[in-house]
Length: 384
Image 1 (cartoon, rainbow, N blue to C red):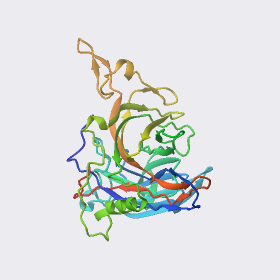
Image 2 (spheres, rainbow, N blue to C red; image 1 turned 45 degrees about the vertical axis):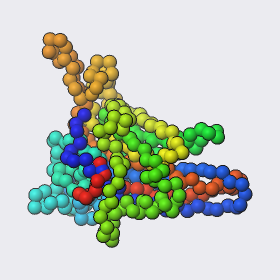
Image 3 (cartoon, rainbow, N blue to C red; image 1 turned 180 degrees about the vertical axis):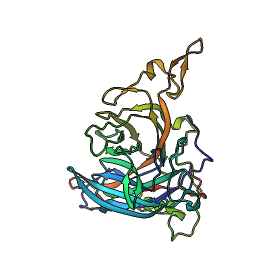
Image 4 (cartoon, helix red, strand yellow; image 1 turned 90 degrees about the vertical axis):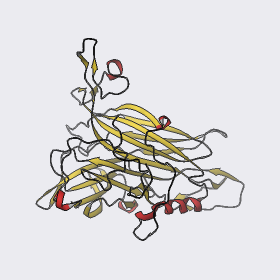
């Protein structure tokens, strides 16, 4: 795989807000329960479209704009958040217009990048050639996430192409223990983003590589008040009103130098007429509080059928170490062409396991206003 660009900064877990409201019930005998305390999504992406981009759009299906708790501002003059209701689908769009990074050089446009290289998911916060986006929500998760680059056509910003870029975001589900003593399970499901209008459009398949780490209770306390204090502390200098520098943290983001962080070497995310889902499951032990993943996505350049579904023979005939490598026979002739193309994006995601809270045995416990997190990198950060 291509090595991450630059040094190993431990990213910047940046704008983090989590508010938990617990509806008390009574003083009856109590058990304990847990859930998802919050989630985040932020990603590095290059403009690999055929034309310059002056804007971008994140579409969150099934999410109302009131649920947007925050976003990474990126290098744009204006940011708007609005609801949509189109073709029976509802959701929210976060729209960025007026690209303004290093204007004397870029002239207000993010140029196409013909040679994108892998990043650690939060490396393009202040780098030329690509951009970093992120958001956090409260109370709900999107049923689908789509990302589009926008051009500026006479002050009218329009999508470049009809298909979303490949930046799948997981849908997290907390599955409580079935029996006493069994572990809880945290599920993360991803699939190739589908376009809004699927008529005659077939999403492209993509290669995916996954890195993962878990944080123990020492890094994410189980007490709700301590958890919120930790999240607010992690805002650090990402908060304009916070003058304090970032505090050194342990390695929180999987960077791949430790083999145990590699959860999946290479998986083919099947697009086409009916994109297939990929699920990862984590058993949540007593001390597990945060699950962090970095998804890397690369183009699939192998054969496809009429529905744009992949016809891959990599597992049978390709190089077992990397679908991006050609295979040659003993005579030096090419016997199998690589099926992995250029880097597309790297998405940093995380789920914070809810704090252990008292739950009345015969009353409903309500947990509302679940905060979402977002990572961000600065030059002073030590995350990587």
